[in-house]
Length: 114
Image 1 (cartoon, one colour):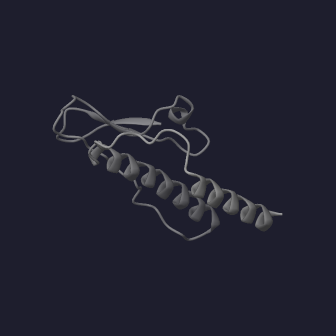
Image 2 (cartoon, rainbow, N blue to C red; image 1 turned 180 degrees about the vertical axis):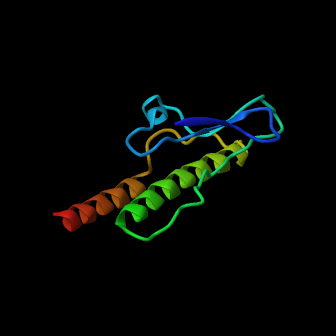
Image 3 (cartoon, rainbow, N blue to C red; image 1 turned 90 degrees about the vertical axis):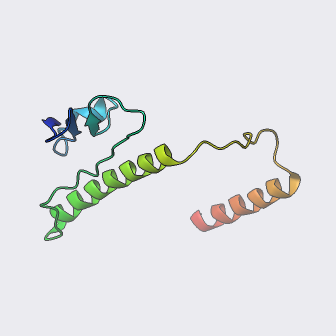
């Protein structure tokens, strides 16, 4: 893992370390920007390296991991921008027709994986 100061900003970027040596994942931390908090601004960085390529199997594996991390960041960005729903949470038991449909899907999945 590394912490690097960001040019022109009052903070730093928290980046993932090399595969197998990334301490932040074990600590439950995610890469991102470290700096003064602002209620009107939230930044997200994909942290894709310039050297990303698909030349050999090892490079493909690294690219796959980096793109997976970028997708996690994109999902976090989407959740941060998506307004909270005013709809109440669904609670209680599902109707009988949905329970029957779910049972059919589970039976079909069991047949396919058997």
